[in-house]
Image (cartoon, rainbow, N blue to C red; front, side, top):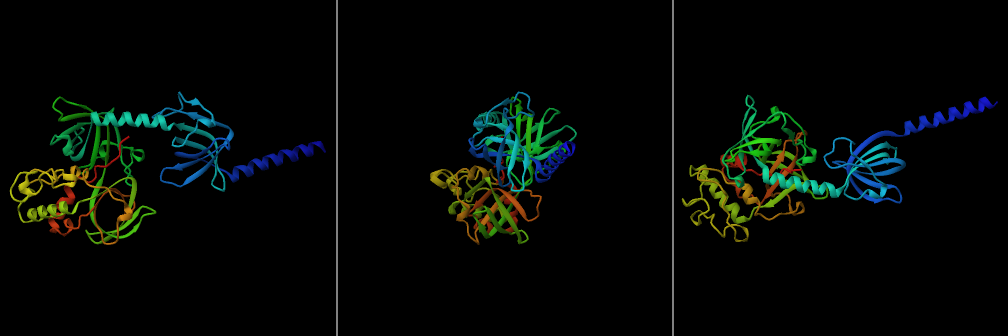
Amino acid sequence: MRIRRVAAIVWFVAGLALAQQTAFKRERTLGTVSQVDAAGRKFVIKADNAAEKPVEVQVDAAILQIAPGARDLTGARTITLAGIDNGDRALVRGFLNSQGVFRADQVVLMSKEDLTKKQEAERAEWKQRGIAGKVIAVHPETREIDVQPHRAMGAAKLVIAVNDSTRQMRYSPDSIRYRDARPSRFEDIHEGDQIQALGSKNEDGTRLTAQQIISGAFHNIAAVVTAVDAASKTLEVKNLDGNKPVTVRIAADTQLRKMPPEMAQRLAMVARMRASGGGFGPPGGGPPGSSAGGFGPGAGPGGRPADPGGTRGGPPDIQSMLERMPAFDIAELKSGDALIIASSDSRTPGQVTAVTILGGVEPLLTAPAASQREMLGTWNLNTNMSLP
């Protein structure tokens, strides 16, 4: 009789374990911590590009803290639940039950404070030792990349040298955030890409030996708004090249700027002159930035120069102007508004993630079609890519 009872208990326990394994699926989630309730052993994790999920930390769970940038648990230190704070980055491992609650048996953290310090140091290094620009040629045989730097960096052309120790990353087709970038190869870089590189320059600043590079494919489109969903931060637009519908997603890092009417009118005049053979130089024959061309001091917002930054016969430098333009909110847009949108190349046809959205461009989109295409192909709206 006793043997039967023991056997029954064993079968009951085994059945209970099997039921638990069936009810719970082991998973992992990476995201940002919020709504910490240390007393209740709970918090919420907002996974990247996903919904929030409640987490219940089991009593025997391992809670570890590592330094930002660490690739394994070497050097991790054990902390208590009280050490978890809002804004921390967390990797949670455990079982997801049928109600969508994580029962965590391991939590690996990078503290918000440590992350902030690391990001500030990295941004300072990129500012001092980094360059950004557009790829104008790729040389596989020498593993070199010719880049047209953004005008603020001065040089007309710069060569990036890539070697076996260079860390290469590429932006995701659906994101402009650095954290979503993925490891890449030299062969992934193509003419027309936007690129940022960190490394050591030669004495005259014309060559950089890259320690790290990050690149991405972006393009500009001219469009008219057909619908606005401010709550979901999306726009429905009609691409004027083919009149095709496009869904535009507004990300946290998307730059929204509005061109002042007088600037739009003057640039439209430049475009019309370009189409008639007058070049991109300012009207009236004056040099760039001169009052003769209408781009002199006082023409821009706040009394600052509205010089498009180009040279005679060259395109305007839209990025320098963007920095002076006022920001706007997606809720201010309405059906019929004209936009120029710089976006990443999406995996999903008809959907893009906006890098920069420029409003107030109606005069530009009434310029001759040939001039529109040339401006869209040369203006650097897509320089708002995020860094570490």
